[in-house]
Image (cartoon, rainbow, N blue to C red):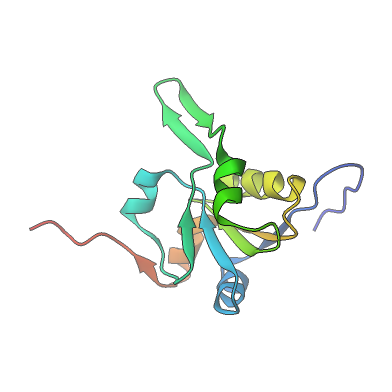
Length: 130
């Protein structure tokens, strides 16, 4: 882990197996992908939230201006959170924002949903339409 301690936010990234262990021990999973991505498949855990960090618009990806407010409306800054996305880029930025906002125990899940599935961990996917 890089230790750049100027005023840089200290983000802890864990791999998906460590993330699963933390979730099993009581951490809440915050999926920061779009609602559309979430509906196509997500980490299968009991305590999961979906709050998009970015929106896909005709102009490209745009940061959700209400991300922190939305998280604060459903989570305490004392909550233990694992933050994940599709591949690990958005979750790293979201985790940094949460730590900067005063969240005390937030971890970024490196590799995201793709790594979770790639490691054979349980995922929820929509039922096939008949």
